[in-house]
Length: 312
Image (cartoon, rainbow, N blue to C red):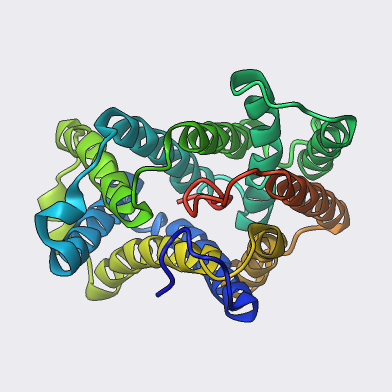
């Protein structure tokens, strides 16, 4: 394992890990869509964060004991976790109402929204080239959505809102992180999500115990798989960003769109039409270029958590 902050030395391995991370997230979204047809989304939404908190908590306790849980910004950890949980909510419910490839593509507007929010909140200079990329990315989203076509209707609110909350999460991380271990932060992300979702789950009219008891083993297995894919995907991302420059890795994040498209055909027999492919390509090209420019201009090494452009 390459520790965060060390000089990157293995770019090929980094690209491999980022590709695996993208595959994890696309697989998680497809699994979420499939399991949503058999089980209330709120149950495995909660389980996804509980899985991460449990696994990372055990791992930190084993690796560093109580010191591994130390954090200098507890409020930051909670707000960051809340933003990521909100992003996940958009994903978990959004993929129930629109195809995963189109959802994934629109959600990939995140790096472009980071440019806008960083300029507004952090007062970072936004060049004309960056504004052109932002405009191009939103044009690509409009091509995918095609307002007035009736293809997705109100459901497009989910990926658009998810991109905004995830961009806010990244800008907040960029501003306040630096003294936190990304592995400790990964634990608190799971803990914050679990803490927020537990009272919601308990207050819901769902008979959670009865539903889980009646669920066949394969549904429980898929629920565990969702948690494992989300947790593993982000760990792979952290490792990848310790092995290669961010500018090298970020374009490969957009493999998630390709994997989501392949799984959409394999599992749901859904294939985007020509214009959806065009829009996806525009979003991917503009987003990758924006991420590359953003990281190339960074004055300090990228934080493995802040550089994340893939949703939980």
